[in-house]
Image 1 (cartoon, rainbow, N blue to C red):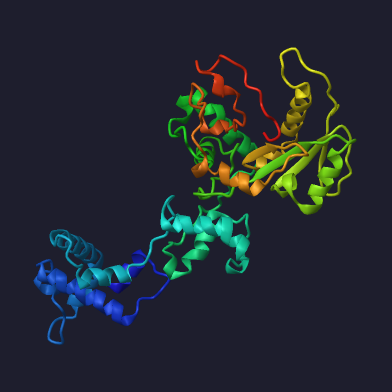
Image 2 (image 1 turned 180 degrees about the horizontal axis):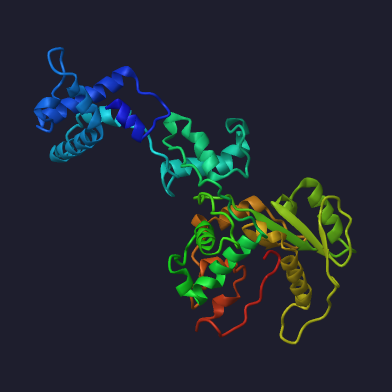
Amino acid sequence: LRANFAHIRPSPLPLSPSRAEAMDSDARGLLAEEGALPDDCAEPSSSQPRRAAKVIAGTAVVLLLGAAATLTARSSAGGGAARTSQAMALDEAAPMACAMAKKGSKCYQKVVWAMTKGIKSQPEWYPHLTERSLFEDFQRHLSLDDTSGCPEPCPAPIGCRTATPGSTCSSQVQWVMASGIEKHPDWFKDLSDDATPEEVQNHIHRENSTACPTPACNPQPFTPLSLYCWMVVRPVGYELPLVKAQKEKKAGTFACDEYALISSTSLDIEGVKTLTISTTTATGYTKDGTSPNAPIFVEAWNKIQADGAYLAHDWVVKCDPDTVFVPDRLKVKLAPSNQPRNPYPPPFKARPGRGQWVTNCDMMASWNAGWGNGWPMMYGAVE
């Protein structure tokens, strides 16, 4: 029984002799008591043929399942009575199958804590892991502790490789999620509106291995949010000294996962990419009441899009040089579980692949009649 059970669900921890013997004898005794064992499968003794033991080993899987079913029925019939010793013996001996932690489970919560807080406050607890390590890597580490309640994650498919930002496969995945499913539902019948990037990549790999040469690796239940932050900086005036002070203290925009500066000329700040635009100067007012520097930021956003570095991150954040900005606090607010209800929901449901925009002004509060009766003006210190 022990050999067959271990063959089906291998355990990283060997069963102790006493626990294994209790499992064997309790299962056989219970099945014999219920009449589930034929006469020639009785407990072998020195006066009985040894073939009886072989029959027991050969039918171990069926017997074990039968024992579990019988124990379940007994427990249910008992109306809340204490579980039998046989059931407890089976529970203690059963190894934990590989699985990715489900959202909301205690294991999931422990892994998320380790990824977001533990690795920062107690990095020595997580050898060989970093803040950019995957969920499954942290779960695998926690599964080494029997008290964590975390199973070991299942191995990733052989030869898998999740598409990297900027690759042909990644571009195809983004197109499918943003508009492909909506425009061509017949092409993607096996994908739902909330399909994960990994599921989309696997679909493309099956249909067109040239675009996506490999299947995706295991979907990750949680990934730390990463921010790509940028600023438009005037080369003359008070903004440049503020930017240099933030860079020295690794604060504000420079506390993001990746960042860039945009100006009309190179700012010569060591280690910081500067993207150039035609001008950073604007004066006066526009006839429609919008900010006169709007064309500057249209050009800046286009420059960010053309550069493409933002594609490696979850969110893009534009911040003014004279704004107090704490990226770690913003990450908490942007986590899907922490996002508040939108007080101004659009008249349609946006596809998940199209991303999100944070409404950070209150101009629409006066739109009592609903959408379309006014024009919101963005308070643009942070976008």
